[in-house]
Image 1 (cartoon, rainbow, N blue to C red):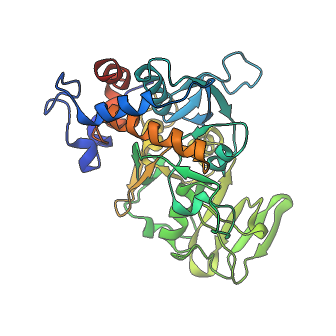
Image 2: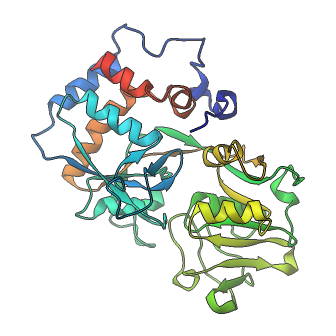
Length: 352
C-alpha cells in the first residue's frame, strides 16, 4: 500500500504529540501503562482462540487479503486494526490468541455482531457511539460495549481533481454525492448539508428513492442516524430535496463501486472518513482524486466492540490495557503506523 504523507493524517494533538523526530516510541524506559497491561494479561483464564470478526472491505483500517469468500485467504486480515490485534497476541505471550473471521459487506450494524455467539470481539473501523450499543430505540439493556478508542476519525469529501469546492455548504441539488448506508460518513454528511437534525430526524418531504425507480416522501418521525434508522428507510438507494436545493445522495453497497462511479463522473463526491479517502486520493492509476473538504468540527474515535456480558467485560478490560500500552495511551496511532506498519509489534516485543 502506498504510504500517505504523515502530515496529512496527523490531525489530533494526541496523535501528533510524538511526531517522528520529536520522540522515541520504543523507549526502553519502563512504562507504567504496560506494567498494568502485563498484570491484566496474567489474570486471563485459559481459553480457546478468541474469535475476532473483522470487516473485510475498509482499506487501510481493516480488510481481507481477498474478497473472494471461497479463497483460502478470505479470512486473512490486513490493515491497521489487524496489525494491532497481531501485536496484542504477541504481547500476551500465548494468553491472547485470535481466530480471524471476515465480515463482508454491508458494513451497517457489524458492531452488534459481537453480541452473537459467533464472535468474541469485532472490529472494522467502527466509530464508537453510545447509541450503537443498543438495538433500535430501546436503550434499557445494551447488547455490546466499546473498548478504548485506538484511532481518530474525521469525515471528508473525496472528489475528482478538477471539482471546485471548499465547503460542504457549497453543495446543491446539481451535485450527486455517494455514501455507504449506515456509516458515520453518510450521517455526518446528511447533518452538514441539512437532511437530518442533531437528533437524527430526516427532514419531512425528503424524496427517498428505492429500487425499481420508486420514490416516496419521508414522513414526520423518520429517523436516520448512525445507529438507528426507520424501517421505512431500509433499502434506500437515493435521497433528494430539490425544493431546498440539497445535494442528491446516492447509496452504494461498497467502496469499490462508489470510487468507480466517482472516477467515471456518475457522482461528484464520495463522503466518508478522511483516512479511507486519503488512501484513494494517492492511488497510482486512474482518474486523479483529491480530498476536497474535511470536517474539522468533529472528531470521533474507532474501537473494537465486545458483548455486554461478564466474559465480554473481562476481555474488554484486558484488551483496553494492552491496547493502551501498544498505542502509548493513544499517542501512537494511524499516522505512525502508516509510516511503520510494524510499530505495534515492536512495542509489544519491547514492553511485554
